Each structure stands twice: as C-alpha cells, then as structure tokens.
Length: 148
Figure (cartoon, rainbow, N blue to C red):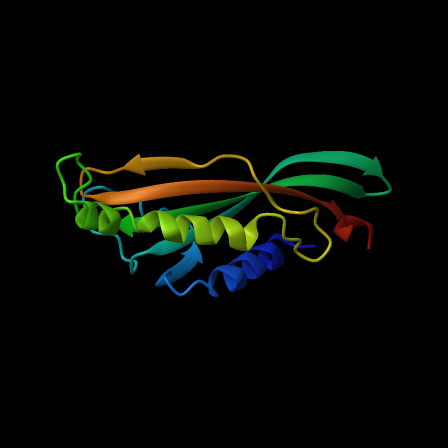
C-alpha cells in the first residue's frame, strides 16, 4: 500500500459528492490570507501522513495514517438570531457538504487498510469569509514494500 494509492482512493470517493467543485492535494492553497485561494469553492484538500510506524521485523511495518480532509467554503449569508429562518438555513447549507464527506469516508476501507475513522472535526473562520472544516481520518495498514 502506497500513500499515493490512499490519496487517489479518497479523492475518487470525494469526487462522487456533487457539491464539491475542487478536489486536490493540500499544498497550502487556503493558508495565505492575503490572496484569494486558487481553488473553486467548495473545495476538498487532502493530505496523508504516517503518524506512527511500528517495526514488525523482516522489513515490515504496521503504519498508522492520518488522512486530513480540509474543506473550504466561500461563506456568504447571515446566521445571527435576528436573521430570517430561510436565510439562516441557506447560510448553514455548507453543513450538508461536511456531512456528505463524513458519510462517504467513515468506516470505508481503502484496499488493505483498516476502516477509516474520523478522529476530529474542527472549524475555523477566516476574516475573508472563507470557512474551513478539517476532518482527520485515521487508518492502519501493513507496509511490506521494503521486504519485497
């Protein structure tokens, strides 16, 4: 199992979500507050990290992986208590996309990995009204590539 296979499998699953307009590897596209990000919104940016590798002998490792899905939304609308219900619902519609991403990935296996498991869900708001929701998913696999 290679990290690029995991990235491609996650990207393919996310591509099934119609609301997502841009799916890519996370290269920091949403990190610069001074320029408008060069993505279409809503977007999903994916990163994969091996967070722990346990040596099993014979050049084999049990690897723990975190797949971080960073969702970006160009946020419009109002959610204050004084806002009419219709406008509030429209402003909160991004939650539907967040839920779709969660249900598309939670419990799924990518080839020989353990089922994906969401470990957190964190929202941040930028001053330029871009809303970001990060969802790390953890999984494990047996890496035998060095033994081959």
